[in-house]
Structure formats: structure tokens, C-alpha cells
Amino acid sequence: HSGSPASADYSVFASIFRKAGTPGATGPQMGPCGRMQAGAGTLYAALYEHGNTRYSLYRFNATAPTLLGTRWTHTLTTTPETVELRMSGNDISVYIDGVLRIGPVTDGSPITTAGKAGIVLFDMRQTGVNDTGGLDNFDAVDAGGGGGGSVIPIFTQHRHRR
Image (cartoon, rainbow, N blue to C red; front, side, top):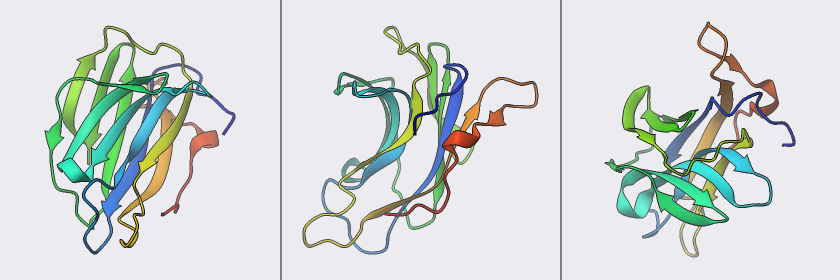
């Protein structure tokens, strides 16, 4: 979408899950991303990496990935989990179902512009394998406003499954 949040401090949410069946060795890799720079391949992403059974926090600069902080080892099931990518200044965090799992990581080479909110999906369908993962309930929320933030309506999208 062409809209951008008012500031670079916001959270991006998505519910992710593994579909029934056996995913391939590498897929799926999916999760919310923020501070995306249109056409530049620059963004933060909270990715679930099924092949490695873990969540990871990445910064991509011109598509080159940098792992930020530690990873959280976890096996995704068919029960949806809400993944939040929280960006506040140079501090980037990942929450799973409201529990801090990665960070906050202070990024020494931060992406400082608001950019856009979105999702990352890799290896969602592989040859000879049924759909392996799903993503639902995508939202982006401004960090501002004393009431805990407000939904950025231009980014809200629900019931999108792959």
C-alpha cells in the first residue's frame, strides 16, 4: 500500500501458523516487517523459519540480511500465534502472543525512516508439498498516543491466507 505511518515508532502484527501436513525442509518463512523502503529491499523483519524451527529478527539493507540479536527456538503448530515486530527508535523487539522473545535489540545501523508496514512470505508452497503455512490478521499500530497507540487503518488487513 502507498500509505506510511506518521513516525518510525510503530508495531506490525500478524497471526501465523503451520498448516496441517509436513512442510518442506526450508519453508515456510513468514512474518511481519516494518520500516520498509519501497523498491530498496531495506526493512526489519520478524521471521519464523520453519526449517530451523525458530523465530529470528533481521534487518535487510538493499536485500542483504543481518541477523539482529538472538533467535528464539520454537516449533510452529497449526494454532495461530500473534507475532509483533515492535520498532521504537533504535530498539527493535519481537513478541510472540504478547511475550517478549527477542530483544529489545539496539541496532547500531538502524533504519530510521518510517517506511511502510508489510509481511514477508518465503517458501509458502513447494513442489510436491501442500500449502505449508498461513498468515492472517495483519495490522500496524502507531506507538504514539497515551492510550497505547492507534491502529493505522491504511495497513489493516484481515483474513488473508496463503
